[in-house]
Image (cartoon, rainbow, N blue to C red; front, side, top):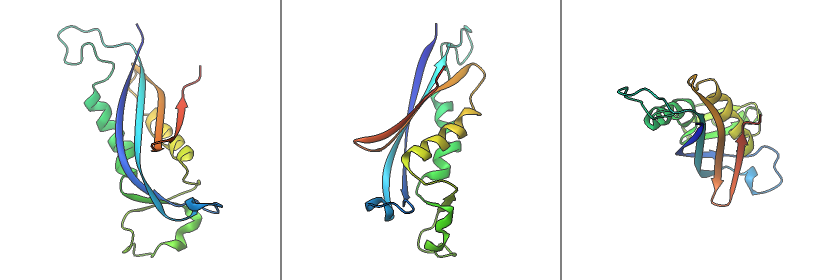
Length: 145
């Protein structure tokens, strides 16, 4: 029987939206909530350590941490055309990441999906990813079949 299993992770990130016509043009931050949902059949292997699991939640947490959280947590993310906004020695901002896309919640979500898709074990499929930027705003991706 196919099931879904979801792991929730959180991270803090700042960004500014290039050429935006509102407040998001200014550097600001969010406490992001990332839900990663897998789909598949739980392992049926009595006496095995992972019996009954789709994927060990600790392993999924570690995978998400390496692929996403370690890349973005406590980082200022800007469009690569905005390099001039940051002092080259980064003394003011510490961790800064420049990306070739507008760092919106939607584009960040697509980057997260790309990072995670290739890391899935053979027995599971990345089914859904939800990235919540505020208590009332989020973007979602679902595998369409």
